Image (cartoon, rainbow over all chains, first blue to last red; front, side, top):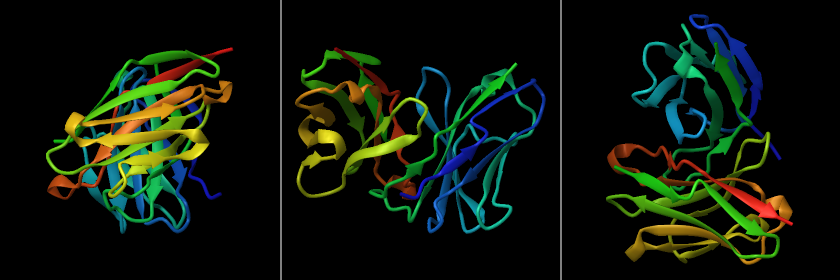
Length: 115
Length: 115
């Protein structure tokens, strides 16, 4: 079964450093998402992406964050200058369309630790 | 605005016992409801979803959930727990209000199964 893949699975970075998390969505999907989960808290929506532009974003997704689809397969999340509070599990996801009943498929997550 | 509350961060059952994971939602319009499961070191996987029609929804691995509008609930059940059911379970709601189709997740409930 097709799946969303994410790299790296774990990353430790120093505060203030830039981090890029990478994702390969399912190949025929058109909508891409990043979510995050701080330890013990809710899975929170960050951003959705369609047709090479951001379609929705949450309050969390400030100027520190950016997303890009640099080629036909990868979808990346960049955190420009990491803070301690950015430590979380980051999930990439994709879907064929964006109806409310649509199924979103998630990757295994990238665990980011900022020290 | 849509939201989800999952009662109990941890639920512990014996193997063979009934599993009941609670989810209450808040939505100003008829919602779409989802349960996702996350096994250790894996991504979120869709268990089942309610869109329209029959309010009792059957999912994978013997799980089912019932949409009760009067109680604003979408509790997840399984008649007999297996050790392999030990995982994190997430309830999510999406209602399309304001043109947003992004599901909102709960905090998750960790299911522990004792032999």
